[in-house]
Length: 200
Image (tube, rainbow, N blue to C red):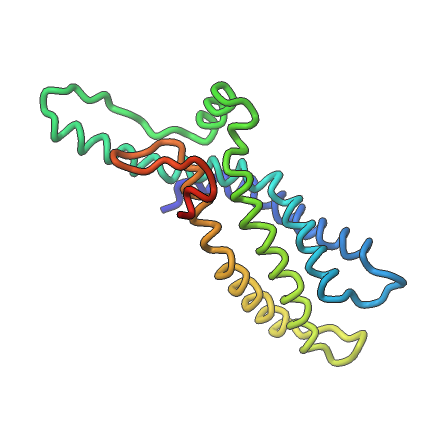
């Protein structure tokens, strides 16, 4: 159940750091004279944050998906070998994240780690466009005054609602991204020529 967790633990920290820092950076540069940002500018800041985030997200997701999918592929091969008793089945071990990274870099170069970049952008940019403004506006409802801070429970609930809404909004893009980033196909599984083909 925790297959691919090491990749997440290693790369999710810089991913979130980039996302949050980029959002603050863009908000700072879009603000004029310290005035509150308009909804459009909040969305633009989120767009910039999501775009910057994919630098780390795409390789992380690529490796995580391969690690999580390795068991399914191995089980399919084992089943096929059992159905063809004359064939000698080689015992395959599941690859590690390091092995996968080396193999991808050797066979496809750095671009191999960024397979599915377009689909990752389609997921992460809209997520940030929805999440950051929604969180800021919901959190503001709990402020005691113009300069006051919201209590923890308001911030927590605002984060939950904003995260849930953003996740539901981009889930179809996440499905497309996952299918595009699956390198090994099982028997009779579709291959896709791109985002539109996969979505269809």
